[in-house]
Length: 484
Image (cartoon, rainbow, N blue to C red; front, top):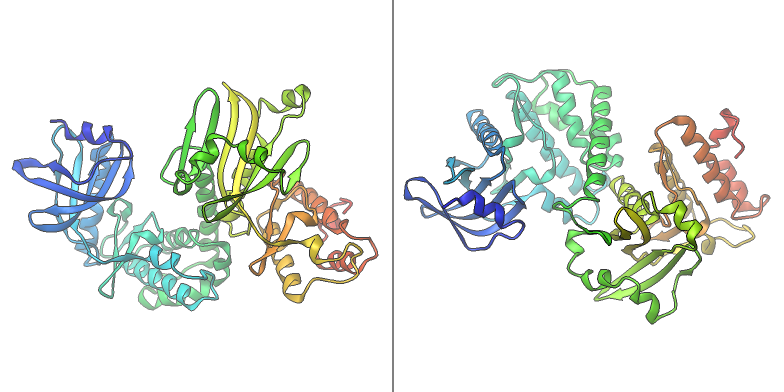
């Protein structure tokens, strides 16, 4: 029996329970799958020789290399007496592939689970700070013993019986076992960790490192090197995440044929199946509730216990189609823009699905499905004559939003007050069709000037609101010759 070939054939849905034969007549009983990377790696828990175990099955063409790295990483942690689940067995699967079995820590919770359970994951929350401090103490121990972890997400740290366990041996790198790593290596690895957090944590780095330095002060750390590593790590993560948003993976379900391209968040794919099979149906059973324009039509839909928004991007004429068919649709652009903003912790309704109607490589109409944001727009909060200002809380939140956009050099492209919604104590951006992340300062400054001017034009030039915005929003054009 070729076990590996069968495991590959199961794809994303290997059955449970499943018996996996090992060498010398031994068997492994899988009762639950924890992570599935089709055709590459399967992670599950089950029973082996009367013990509750966690098993990793490596089934890709490069299985030996990944298995060996995992094995080496687990052994390195154990040799340095760092907490990681006990290695029980490893070896080759019949017919190719490899396995690795460790003790299963029943009842353990990952720091990612603890993090997601928090109502607030900003630096202002002591519980969030405690989780970050716990990781930094674990990293200090790693670095002090000459090791680093290259996949530093919170899911790779398990809490069990008051101890913190490091998992994912594949990401453990040995630099100088038994001796502290260099300051540059430490700065790079710490930067990779902080890059997993939203940018609001960047200002807390030096303060948070007190815990790290209490356990590993062998090398003097350079804050600038850490920030450079944060910036490069976050940029890489963003590119990787946006790439995943348009390909089939753990987070996104992507289906493509001659007639259409569909990307949907995997967690929502089942709930949205009927809606995405007939995306025009909500527009026919009721008048569009939010917008009925020529280039796009927007309506609101109730689905089970959720309120959603569907935006359909129309093709107005043959000439319009000839301008659009050869490039990604506005739905595609808005889909990526929404995920970009949420990655940076800038408030925007959650993008749930994107669908393009196609004829082979040629694009036609497209649809975008997002969560509904029940807020008031800025033009509702401030009278049309601009005779008063929003509340102090709202003023602060509006400036905070534009500070975030300025920091990441992002322009909205259509900065009308109706595209800025007040909800849950902050301002949310909607209608992201023209959003752009700029690489060149000159391009960014021009776009900022346009956004700034468009926002101010929502109210008369001599009004209180317009004058406040003129004073409060930086005028980058003053130094560049751009008219704001």
